[in-house]
Image (tube, rainbow, N blue to C red):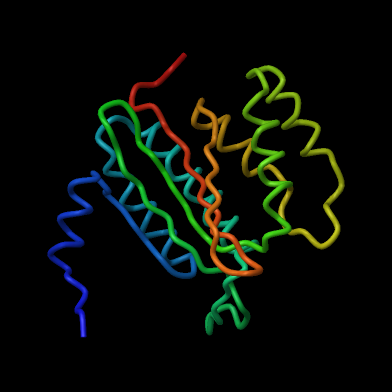
Length: 184
């Protein structure tokens, strides 16, 4: 039987400069701990708030849309399961999430991400206002603002990567870069 090596895992985290990684269901308690951890972001309080806001958006996406669910005693219902990690390079923090989604959800996600990434800052702001006024989508939670918020808060495009998972599901990977230096 092959054993999981905590030492190897720690070395991989250090090599990739991963400061935070969580897998499971995202409860309020978990998000509070992540928020507390991000307050120690060395660059600035503003960047820490942006990072936390993006983590919240990603956690909400996992919570609502993951095709893999786990029962939460605290909530009394099934909640989406996924992973969120924060890494860094010399100039950015990179927040990445991953979760299973139903394959039929892939084309609309890619289309929406491409559309949002193609908007100028002014058009993005205008689209955000339109979406806020739009009626709730039938059978879909949330206001459909997650991708827009992530681009607005990060100042960078979102990156989507889709991996084959099984016959009916794909693994959806979402990454956002946040500049360590504040842009005007």
